[in-house]
Image 1: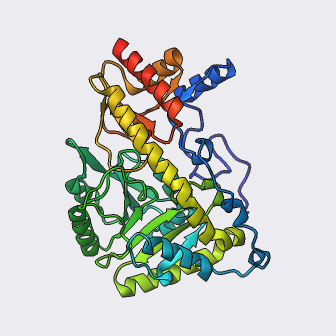
Image 2 (image 1 turned 30 degrees about the horizontal axis):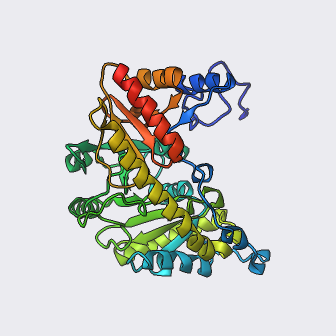
Image 3 (image 1 turned 180 degrees about the vertical axis):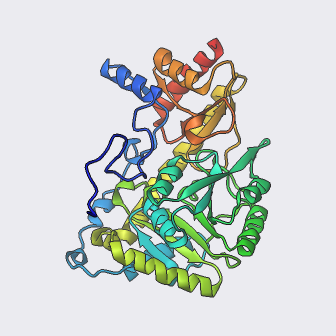
Length: 400
């Protein structure tokens, strides 16, 4: 008695967190067939800066020639020297962020996991923007948290639909996620929108989580945008970033969050986050010792990415002028969204471009656009590939 018998039909020995479909989609399968046949694919979806033909200074390698990394001194929030480097990063951008508010993680994905552990119980809810990066559902599933969406709307420019935020809130909502600037729309949260959100969160006892990994990649200036949530006082708020985008170094695995809000809430949140971090101690000593030098050397990489994104955007605007495709207004990041004729679905457009033009783009439904038809293209792409790919794309779209 007391022992469960053998698994019956329909039972599983694995967690119900793993309920997504692991099978490759049609575009992935078609791409594999193309590559197996030896086709030269013009990939306009590049998201990995280390594969984008950028120059990385030797200082990045030299940053690890540091005797301090031979000693293990565990610090749940991160070592003081690494947190001071992050504080200096904010100071250089005009934001005073005390070291005592900075907690290091191995990545922003891990930061989300920490915050979901901090803020939610199983079955609780978080609100995420639509459209946006599709990672949220997977991260939430891993923590047994439910995702509800609020809308970003486009009327010549993107804005946050505050009414949809209010309607999405329920008694089980524990946090609202912002992506600032959004991926892939490239839209920043505006000061007026942030003011309304902080007031709403303070009233409802909900936290704000701001993913700011693309904040350094502005494509235009706007005094009305909210550059960061670091320093918000009205409600509990968390601002996240990391070396992956800031310095173009995704392999270094160093992220961080800044804890803001009313003092009592901020203090309690910090104490609990330190407890979570102490359970895992995931941030490596070498990358913490090297953090200041990596951030400094990363400025060279970041500058190249900004220059490339701006140049590719200018080329795309010229190449698509007068065509059937329209570039939606973009403020930052390294992606653009093309609105294309709805004579075909997004899936049909992307498959046809791959099959007949050897051009790879992403369909809007990867990012959960509410309507069709949109294609997403990376401005990080090497210029020669970007230009040839755009030329083929325009030719294919024109032919219909």
